[in-house]
Length: 191
Image 1 (cartoon, rainbow, N blue to C red):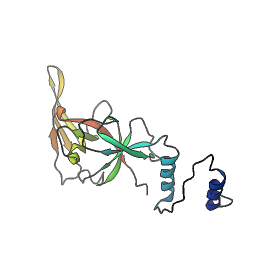
Image 2 (cartoon, rainbow, N blue to C red):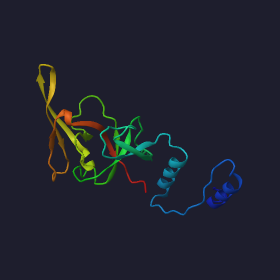
Image 3 (cartoon, rainbow, N blue to C red):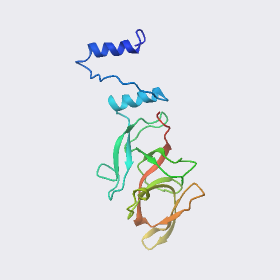
Image 4 (cartoon, rainbow, N blue to C red):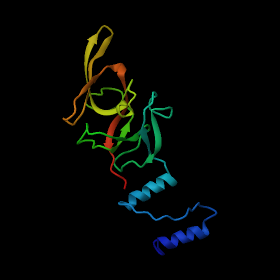
């Protein structure tokens, strides 16, 4: 490709390697970031190792994973500063309640929720008993107050706090939700 150019390389592949490599018909394409487009095409068509599942939020009674809750719709390459770990996934977050940290329509990276304190973390939560798909999952800052009881400790109050002051915080009881993921980063657009 360096010596003869990309066109000559493609002609050579089409003529000589058709028994070894599947070469599809050429398509013209435009991209704002050609390198990102090439990485995406390579990942989708050649090698998906190290990629992160791209999931679509949808209304479902189930939870995360292949059994329901999120539908896997593709894969993305993690940014250079992120090491993909098992269970990481990306999903688009709509709404303005977490602006400016998470802009409306952002593609965001999440990891499975870790054990330990959730206080102050941005969490993706699934709210039970909600039939509206747009309200079933939300990203908010988690805050809880605990109190001691005969059986140990218990939540006195759980608050989901938006970052945008135009929106109000709201409270949940422990049996009304589950943590589906912990926010890691807003991903830059690929193209």
